[in-house]
Image (cartoon, rainbow over all chains, first blue to last red; front, side):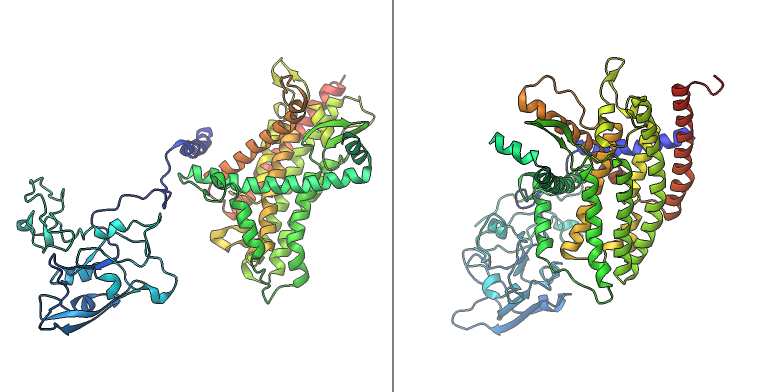
Length: 214
Length: 368
């Protein structure tokens, strides 16, 4: 009988003990948690190192998008100065960031790795219309600088915009072991030919191809 | 300067005004601090960080919340009973203030010829007054619940009637041994049979026995203290007895339909009541402002009783918060069982036992 009540009192000690344990809360703007390599942040439209746009205006991303937040219109490349290596290019490209669920299916669908995701997620806006990212906010410049509506401040780190999509650089894309460590993606302006993501081999097979080339 | 202060405190009217304002200021500051302390301690006990943005360590968080509520619209729902709806928050605050008025928070001091007590009013029936006022607190909740014209507040109000009235009984019974013990301590030294004055009850706890144990009533009256504390938790509607405002069951209970500063008044009254019952427990059982002043000079010795009083009270407040962080809410029938089948019989048995022992010690055995 008596021991039963002692057990209940023990709960008080359990609670009291917690006061001296480390806190689980991260005081966010001051301290930022390390993001996973394949973090899904805002999108970026990539260019090849020679300045050509990767987007060919195929609209597969818009088709696959479960949230229907992407609007793309393709246009034939001008014959004398083509924008993309393909037949067409995306001359309208809009993503409604309020609708986007950051599932990265557009990244998976893209045949040319034109759209990838960065690690930046601080995208607060003052109006709904500002949340629609147009081509001018998504497309990187020929030297690889990604535009962003908000300026650099203590709340965001624009350096995260250069971190490329981790999913694409997974060691065994689509789960196929023969792709492990093989760069099956194209180089990007600014970042060059990105190396395979490290530390992904389940069996500890050493990965090949170390450094990137411009 | 000193002469002016003398004149001011020598005048009964101005002394009362100063004391009333001081009580108002102290109780509001204490309530703001307790809200912050509770949030901090509960967050510590849950491995969180709690408020941290407003002021150092978030001390000003409650002030910010209060200002926000002050500027918010106080919505008047359509189905309210206007008079009772408006009166309920005031009826919650007034008893809380009045109870604090009777609590001595420091050693009386003299300015010139006037003895100034650290107490709003030194009533000779303070204990009765406190019990009466804590019964008054039920009215605010019942009025709020009924006047809101809505289901959940009504449920909260009905729960409040049952809960607060049944625990009131145990609380009152647990305080009777205190009065008896005080009377026995006086031992006929006073012309009256006993005392209910808070200041006298504190003075009776002076001294020590066996050299180091202070003469606090708790060492004779532990069962009373335990019963008083449990029923005080229920009386102030704190977890685990917060059925009156159980968020998960009846939204906010009696204050569901209140917004803006009327809600803030209920909120503040709850925390003032928590401080009040802790202070009453300190005065009745833990020696009030008594404590060593280590022979420190001047104003430090003058301030030490205040320090001891607030230290003891905050320890009890901490226990309140600790209980809240630990125990889940009781079911309604468990609450009633605890009140009527455990606490009231226990306090009755303890009262009987204590009465017999006290009478025996004072008047000798019945056959002698």
